[in-house]
Amino acid sequence: MVSLRSGAFVILYAVFAILPWFGFADVEWVDWDRRQICMPERYIQPGTEAELIDVIKNAANNGMQVKVVGSGHSFSSITLTDVDRGAILLNLDKLNHVLEIDGKQFEVTVQAGIRIHVLNDILLKSGFALINTGAIAQQSIAGATQTGTHGTGKQIGSMSTAIQSFKILLANGTVLNGVSADTNPELFYAGRVGLGCLGVMMEMTLAIYPKFKLKRTAMPYSLKQLLIDLPQLEQQYDRMQWYYTPYTDNATLLLREAVPIDTPIVPCWPGALSTSLTNNVTCIDWSFKALCHEADDNIKYTEMEYFVDAKDGLSLAVAFLAAQSSLANSTYNDCKTQKFGACTLFTGMRYAAADENWMSPMYNQDIAVVSNIVLGTPDIAGPPEIFSAYGRELEKIATLEYGGRPHWGKMNWATSHDLRPAYPMLDNFVKLREALDPNRMFLNAYVQQRLGV
Image 1 (cartoon, rainbow, N blue to C red):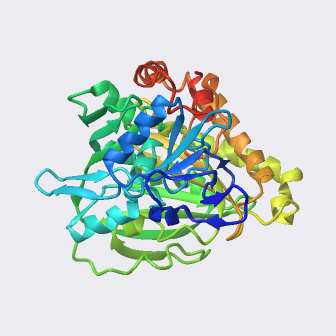
Image 2: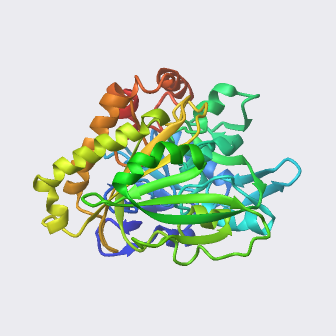
Image 3: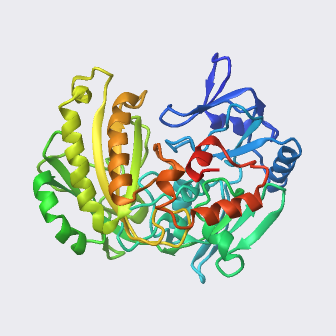
């Protein structure tokens, strides 16, 4: 969201598509949950690659900071410009085309600004699909992959692992095309989850698959029983996740299972998930409709995720549950009394397979990831005091006891002291980053704190 700095008007940044490519000065940008705010000198939305290159060259000549933003669905400050630098906030929504669908190689080449839900629709019409997506499909493909966004599936990697090659614009205006594991392995494995600080992603080629259907089952469960059954369930199901409401014994096991392509559709949209506490709720639909929510605008929330080795997932869940119970007996039980404002707690766990991307939370280990979410109202996310209390507990447990790694695009308070032991390639990433961007055009305070630079 972008507004005039005076606060007189608030305008969805999509409206800026009608403005010239050189952008709009004196703006305020606000993220999806309205917790992250920055005031860049300019907000620019180039319409062509040539215009994008000119923006970066001009920024380099003037010593300006550049940060790229998409839908604003990162809850962390990873996309924010800094207050002490002349800065450009760059949006790639106009660079949003599917360039080629290669059915023989099972690849699609897209511009970096395309939204995931748009890509899903186009692929389906052509008979193809992404193998996995996150629960939200409003992000740009660049934003999702740069932060390591994932779905669930113990044998399925994050969305970044689908990238076969990419085209990137460096801080000096140089364009590197066809970056792959064969042509430039260091940049490839650093850049697939590049945290937005190596350069501007322009295009990427992604692996695709023949379109497929999934049956999604939401199964009410006793939380106590679920924790007992979990090891067996993890072995039995590939695409599994589960969630629960703190202070209760109410949990839900969410399963997604492949079905034959000719299975009749029982729509997953609308009415994505049921709140039934007694009955299984099922749907059968095209893969992305069983994987993603139809929309994400019904209620605002703030989220964090911590990734640990899959073998430690149950232990982390039990430890965090104990911490939640402790907080329930303290001041922060006021999420129930709503002393701080309307809020609901939500905790979930998903799974993903290991990858080779240097700064991926899944680097070299299969993971279980715990989500801590505080829901608010349709107008504002849950109280930050509540979120901080529970989030810091999760971060402390995950970091100190399990070498946990945060989701880059979701709230965290991590430092390089926390992350260096968890990321064996962190120093290599820092060295490469400095070589590509010695004047630190693409760095901001968030990344500096986490990389220790």
